[in-house]
Length: 298
Image (cartoon, rainbow, N blue to C red; front, side, top):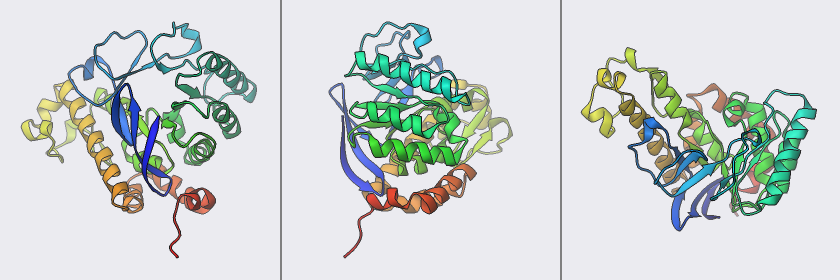
Protein backbone atom coordinates (compact mmCIF):
# COMPACT_ATOMS: atom_id res chain seq x y z
CA UNK A 1 0.00 0.00 0.00
CA UNK A 2 0.93 3.65 -0.24
CA UNK A 3 2.15 5.49 2.83
CA UNK A 4 1.37 9.20 2.48
CA UNK A 5 4.02 11.50 3.92
CA UNK A 6 2.73 14.91 2.86
CA UNK A 7 0.08 16.70 0.82
CA UNK A 8 0.26 19.82 -1.30
CA UNK A 9 -3.33 20.24 -2.31
CA UNK A 10 -4.56 16.85 -3.60
CA UNK A 11 -0.98 15.95 -4.63
CA UNK A 12 0.60 13.30 -2.42
CA UNK A 13 4.20 12.69 -1.47
CA UNK A 14 4.53 9.11 -0.37
CA UNK A 15 6.28 5.78 -0.17
CA UNK A 16 4.84 2.79 -2.00
CA UNK A 17 5.59 -0.37 -0.05
CA UNK A 18 5.86 -3.03 -2.72
CA UNK A 19 7.74 -6.34 -2.83
CA UNK A 20 9.76 -5.44 0.30
CA UNK A 21 10.88 -2.20 -1.35
CA UNK A 22 10.14 1.38 -0.42
CA UNK A 23 9.51 3.29 -3.63
CA UNK A 24 9.17 7.10 -3.46
CA UNK A 25 6.07 8.54 -5.10
CA UNK A 26 5.04 10.22 -7.33
CA UNK A 27 7.12 8.01 -9.62
CA UNK A 28 6.99 5.99 -12.82
CA UNK A 29 7.09 2.31 -13.68
CA UNK A 30 9.79 1.44 -16.22
CA UNK A 31 8.29 -0.56 -19.10
CA UNK A 32 10.50 -3.52 -19.96
CA UNK A 33 11.07 -3.53 -23.73
CA UNK A 34 14.08 -4.25 -25.98
CA UNK A 35 14.78 -0.50 -25.99
CA UNK A 36 14.92 -0.31 -22.18
CA UNK A 37 16.62 -3.62 -21.41
CA UNK A 38 19.82 -1.92 -20.18
CA UNK A 39 18.17 0.62 -17.91
CA UNK A 40 17.80 0.42 -14.14
CA UNK A 41 14.97 1.80 -12.04
CA UNK A 42 13.21 1.34 -8.69
CA UNK A 43 10.25 -0.59 -10.12
CA UNK A 44 9.32 -2.14 -13.48
CA UNK A 45 6.19 -3.10 -15.39
CA UNK A 46 5.85 -5.72 -18.14
CA UNK A 47 3.18 -7.77 -19.92
CA UNK A 48 2.57 -11.21 -18.43
CA UNK A 49 4.33 -12.96 -21.32
CA UNK A 50 7.68 -11.17 -20.81
CA UNK A 51 10.31 -13.15 -18.93
CA UNK A 52 12.69 -10.99 -16.93
CA UNK A 53 14.85 -11.11 -13.82
CA UNK A 54 14.29 -7.40 -13.15
CA UNK A 55 12.44 -6.46 -10.04
CA UNK A 56 10.44 -5.40 -8.26
CA UNK A 57 8.05 -6.05 -11.14
CA UNK A 58 4.39 -5.25 -11.69
CA UNK A 59 2.88 -7.72 -14.15
CA UNK A 60 0.24 -6.34 -16.51
CA UNK A 61 -2.18 -9.07 -17.55
CA UNK A 62 -3.65 -7.13 -20.47
CA UNK A 63 -7.24 -7.79 -21.49
CA UNK A 64 -9.70 -10.56 -20.79
CA UNK A 65 -9.55 -11.45 -24.48
CA UNK A 66 -5.91 -12.48 -23.98
CA UNK A 67 -6.84 -15.31 -21.59
CA UNK A 68 -3.71 -14.76 -19.50
CA UNK A 69 -3.07 -17.18 -16.63
CA UNK A 70 -2.99 -15.17 -13.40
CA UNK A 71 0.18 -15.84 -11.46
CA UNK A 72 2.34 -13.38 -9.57
CA UNK A 73 0.99 -10.04 -8.35
CA UNK A 74 0.04 -7.56 -11.01
CA UNK A 75 -2.75 -5.64 -12.67
CA UNK A 76 -5.65 -7.92 -13.52
CA UNK A 77 -7.01 -8.04 -17.08
CA UNK A 78 -9.65 -5.54 -18.08
CA UNK A 79 -12.53 -6.00 -20.51
CA UNK A 80 -12.05 -3.06 -22.82
CA UNK A 81 -14.26 -2.57 -25.84
CA UNK A 82 -12.73 0.79 -26.69
CA UNK A 83 -12.92 4.37 -25.46
CA UNK A 84 -15.50 6.20 -27.60
CA UNK A 85 -18.05 3.42 -27.46
CA UNK A 86 -21.75 3.05 -26.77
CA UNK A 87 -22.68 3.14 -23.11
CA UNK A 88 -24.01 -0.42 -23.22
CA UNK A 89 -20.58 -1.72 -24.27
CA UNK A 90 -18.83 0.37 -21.62
CA UNK A 91 -21.18 -1.02 -18.98
CA UNK A 92 -20.47 -4.56 -20.15
CA UNK A 93 -16.73 -3.91 -19.96
CA UNK A 94 -17.04 -2.67 -16.37
CA UNK A 95 -19.20 -5.65 -15.42
CA UNK A 96 -16.78 -8.21 -16.82
CA UNK A 97 -13.72 -6.47 -15.35
CA UNK A 98 -15.28 -6.35 -11.88
CA UNK A 99 -16.40 -9.97 -12.08
CA UNK A 100 -12.82 -11.12 -12.59
CA UNK A 101 -11.50 -8.74 -9.93
CA UNK A 102 -13.79 -10.31 -7.34
CA UNK A 103 -11.92 -13.59 -7.78
CA UNK A 104 -8.54 -11.96 -7.01
CA UNK A 105 -9.14 -9.46 -4.19
CA UNK A 106 -5.44 -8.95 -3.43
CA UNK A 107 -4.46 -7.94 -6.98
CA UNK A 108 -4.27 -4.58 -8.70
CA UNK A 109 -7.16 -3.82 -11.05
CA UNK A 110 -8.22 -1.60 -13.95
CA UNK A 111 -10.87 1.10 -13.74
CA UNK A 112 -12.80 0.73 -16.98
CA UNK A 113 -15.75 2.77 -18.18
CA UNK A 114 -14.71 4.38 -21.46
CA UNK A 115 -15.76 8.02 -21.78
CA UNK A 116 -18.39 7.82 -19.02
CA UNK A 117 -17.23 9.36 -15.71
CA UNK A 118 -20.10 7.86 -13.72
CA UNK A 119 -19.14 4.36 -14.85
CA UNK A 120 -15.53 5.02 -13.90
CA UNK A 121 -16.64 6.24 -10.48
CA UNK A 122 -18.88 3.22 -9.97
CA UNK A 123 -16.07 0.84 -10.90
CA UNK A 124 -13.65 2.67 -8.61
CA UNK A 125 -16.04 2.37 -5.66
CA UNK A 126 -16.11 -1.38 -6.02
CA UNK A 127 -12.31 -1.56 -6.31
CA UNK A 128 -11.65 1.08 -3.69
CA UNK A 129 -9.59 -1.02 -1.27
CA UNK A 130 -7.03 -2.34 -3.80
CA UNK A 131 -3.38 -1.45 -3.29
CA UNK A 132 -2.98 -0.47 -6.97
CA UNK A 133 -5.55 0.81 -9.45
CA UNK A 134 -5.01 1.67 -13.11
CA UNK A 135 -6.92 4.28 -15.08
CA UNK A 136 -7.79 2.58 -18.38
CA UNK A 137 -7.13 4.53 -21.62
CA UNK A 138 -4.95 7.05 -19.80
CA UNK A 139 -3.38 8.45 -22.97
CA UNK A 140 -6.82 9.01 -24.54
CA UNK A 141 -8.07 10.78 -21.43
CA UNK A 142 -5.08 13.12 -21.51
CA UNK A 143 -6.28 14.40 -24.89
CA UNK A 144 -9.64 15.46 -23.40
CA UNK A 145 -9.00 17.78 -20.43
CA UNK A 146 -12.57 18.11 -19.18
CA UNK A 147 -13.14 14.36 -19.19
CA UNK A 148 -9.71 13.82 -17.63
CA UNK A 149 -10.51 16.13 -14.73
CA UNK A 150 -13.95 14.63 -14.21
CA UNK A 151 -12.67 11.04 -14.15
CA UNK A 152 -9.63 11.62 -11.95
CA UNK A 153 -11.36 13.76 -9.34
CA UNK A 154 -14.28 11.33 -9.08
CA UNK A 155 -12.00 8.31 -8.81
CA UNK A 156 -9.63 9.85 -6.29
CA UNK A 157 -12.54 10.84 -4.07
CA UNK A 158 -14.00 7.33 -3.77
CA UNK A 159 -10.92 5.10 -3.50
CA UNK A 160 -8.81 4.41 -0.44
CA UNK A 161 -6.34 7.24 0.23
CA UNK A 162 -3.61 4.60 0.52
CA UNK A 163 -4.32 3.15 -2.92
CA UNK A 164 -1.64 3.93 -5.49
CA UNK A 165 -3.32 5.38 -8.61
CA UNK A 166 -1.54 4.60 -11.90
CA UNK A 167 -2.21 6.43 -15.17
CA UNK A 168 -0.33 4.94 -18.16
CA UNK A 169 0.72 6.78 -21.29
CA UNK A 170 0.73 10.33 -19.92
CA UNK A 171 2.69 13.01 -21.84
CA UNK A 172 5.54 14.53 -19.86
CA UNK A 173 4.10 18.04 -19.92
CA UNK A 174 0.94 16.86 -18.14
CA UNK A 175 2.67 15.08 -15.25
CA UNK A 176 2.52 17.96 -12.72
CA UNK A 177 -1.20 18.62 -13.22
CA UNK A 178 -1.94 14.88 -13.10
CA UNK A 179 -0.09 14.60 -9.79
CA UNK A 180 -2.09 17.62 -8.64
CA UNK A 181 -5.24 15.55 -9.18
CA UNK A 182 -3.92 12.67 -7.10
CA UNK A 183 -2.13 10.37 -9.56
CA UNK A 184 0.81 8.55 -7.95
CA UNK A 185 2.32 6.40 -10.69
CA UNK A 186 3.01 6.78 -14.40
CA UNK A 187 5.06 4.78 -16.90
CA UNK A 188 7.59 5.23 -19.69
CA UNK A 189 5.35 4.37 -22.63
CA UNK A 190 5.13 7.99 -23.83
CA UNK A 191 8.91 8.44 -23.61
CA UNK A 192 9.55 5.19 -25.50
CA UNK A 193 7.01 5.96 -28.23
CA UNK A 194 8.53 9.42 -28.63
CA UNK A 195 11.99 7.92 -29.12
CA UNK A 196 10.67 5.39 -31.64
CA UNK A 197 9.34 8.23 -33.78
CA UNK A 198 12.62 10.14 -33.41
CA UNK A 199 11.48 12.65 -30.79
CA UNK A 200 13.67 14.11 -28.07
CA UNK A 201 11.63 15.16 -25.06
CA UNK A 202 12.17 17.79 -22.40
CA UNK A 203 10.02 18.53 -19.38
CA UNK A 204 7.70 20.65 -21.51
CA UNK A 205 8.31 19.89 -25.20
CA UNK A 206 9.01 17.17 -27.77
CA UNK A 207 11.48 17.90 -30.59
CA UNK A 208 12.38 15.96 -33.74
CA UNK A 209 15.94 14.89 -32.90
CA UNK A 210 16.99 15.31 -36.54
CA UNK A 211 16.26 19.05 -36.40
CA UNK A 212 18.08 19.91 -33.19
CA UNK A 213 21.26 21.96 -33.62
CA UNK A 214 22.23 21.43 -30.00
CA UNK A 215 20.89 19.36 -27.13
CA UNK A 216 19.04 21.40 -24.48
CA UNK A 217 19.91 18.95 -21.71
CA UNK A 218 22.93 18.05 -19.61
CA UNK A 219 21.96 14.51 -18.53
CA UNK A 220 24.65 11.85 -18.81
CA UNK A 221 23.48 10.89 -22.30
CA UNK A 222 23.48 14.42 -23.68
CA UNK A 223 26.73 15.36 -21.96
CA UNK A 224 28.60 12.53 -23.74
CA UNK A 225 26.87 12.53 -27.13
CA UNK A 226 25.60 14.85 -29.81
CA UNK A 227 22.31 14.91 -31.67
CA UNK A 228 23.60 12.77 -34.51
CA UNK A 229 24.56 9.95 -32.14
CA UNK A 230 21.15 10.06 -30.47
CA UNK A 231 19.45 10.07 -33.85
CA UNK A 232 21.30 6.90 -34.85
CA UNK A 233 21.05 5.08 -31.52
CA UNK A 234 17.58 4.29 -30.22
CA UNK A 235 18.89 3.10 -26.85
CA UNK A 236 20.56 6.46 -26.23
CA UNK A 237 17.47 8.43 -27.22
CA UNK A 238 15.25 6.28 -25.02
CA UNK A 239 17.69 6.65 -22.13
CA UNK A 240 17.65 10.44 -22.48
CA UNK A 241 13.85 10.56 -22.62
CA UNK A 242 13.60 8.44 -19.49
CA UNK A 243 16.23 10.58 -17.76
CA UNK A 244 13.87 13.51 -18.36
CA UNK A 245 11.10 11.60 -16.60
CA UNK A 246 13.40 10.98 -13.63
CA UNK A 247 14.15 14.68 -13.40
CA UNK A 248 10.49 15.67 -13.63
CA UNK A 249 9.52 13.17 -10.92
CA UNK A 250 12.32 14.35 -8.63
CA UNK A 251 11.29 17.99 -9.09
CA UNK A 252 7.65 17.14 -8.39
CA UNK A 253 8.53 15.27 -5.20
CA UNK A 254 10.83 18.01 -3.97
CA UNK A 255 8.29 20.76 -4.71
CA UNK A 256 5.62 18.87 -2.72
CA UNK A 257 8.16 18.38 0.08
CA UNK A 258 8.90 22.11 0.20
CA UNK A 259 5.33 23.35 -0.31
CA UNK A 260 5.99 24.84 -3.75
CA UNK A 261 4.16 22.34 -5.87
CA UNK A 262 1.22 24.56 -6.83
CA UNK A 263 3.67 27.05 -8.29
CA UNK A 264 5.32 24.27 -10.32
CA UNK A 265 1.92 23.12 -11.63
CA UNK A 266 0.94 26.61 -12.73
CA UNK A 267 4.29 27.28 -14.40
CA UNK A 268 4.40 23.94 -16.22
CA UNK A 269 0.80 24.28 -17.43
CA UNK A 270 1.87 27.17 -19.64
CA UNK A 271 3.73 24.71 -21.88
CA UNK A 272 0.70 22.49 -22.62
CA UNK A 273 -2.76 23.46 -23.82
CA UNK A 274 -4.19 20.27 -22.30
CA UNK A 275 -2.54 20.94 -18.94
CA UNK A 276 -3.68 24.57 -18.92
CA UNK A 277 -7.25 23.57 -19.80
CA UNK A 278 -7.29 20.90 -17.09
CA UNK A 279 -5.95 23.34 -14.49
CA UNK A 280 -8.55 26.00 -15.37
CA UNK A 281 -11.35 23.44 -15.10
CA UNK A 282 -10.00 22.32 -11.73
CA UNK A 283 -9.92 25.89 -10.42
CA UNK A 284 -13.33 26.85 -11.79
CA UNK A 285 -15.38 23.69 -11.31
CA UNK A 286 -13.63 21.50 -8.72
CA UNK A 287 -13.20 23.96 -5.89
CA UNK A 288 -14.53 21.54 -3.27
CA UNK A 289 -12.11 18.82 -4.39
CA UNK A 290 -9.15 21.20 -4.08
CA UNK A 291 -10.39 22.76 -0.83
CA UNK A 292 -10.64 19.36 0.86
CA UNK A 293 -6.85 18.98 0.71
CA UNK A 294 -5.86 22.63 1.17
CA UNK A 295 -5.29 23.75 4.77
CA UNK A 296 -6.82 27.10 5.65
CA UNK A 297 -4.63 29.41 7.72
CA UNK A 298 -6.23 30.62 10.99
